[in-house]
Length: 141
Image 1: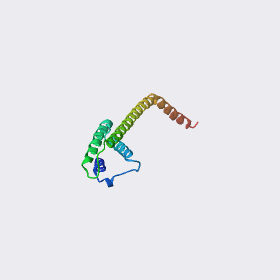
Image 2 (image 1 turned 135 degrees about the vertical axis):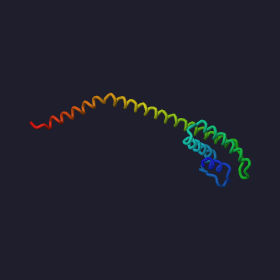
Image 3 (image 1 turned 60 degrees about the horizontal axis):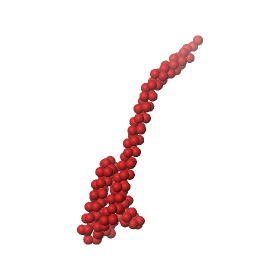
Image 4 (image 1 turned 30 degrees about the horizontal axis):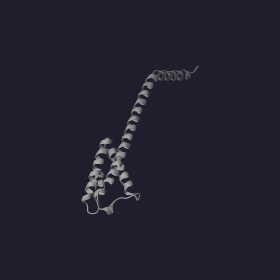
């Protein structure tokens, strides 16, 4: 569905385009950056997704030569490709950070588990001591 939106935005009527008002260069960079990050959420192979979207950016820009109300522009394709590349780099960085955090959490869980195993005899002794002391304190003399 997202890919169809990209194709429609590139090849649909020029009057129906989504514009931010900050210039077509900004629109191309931000649009492809956003699409790349969203595609990387679905398929976390950032550089593969980025490469595919860079190829799509050039292909869609070339296909605009066949539409009656648009023209293809090499600079627009470069802006789109730079947005896809920036999105791929950003997604790759997020994926690496997430993997590092997960490894750290697994390491912390292993340390906590080993500490719990080491403290288990002490906890059992303390529980037995408290239970025995309670039993002795309730005996009437």
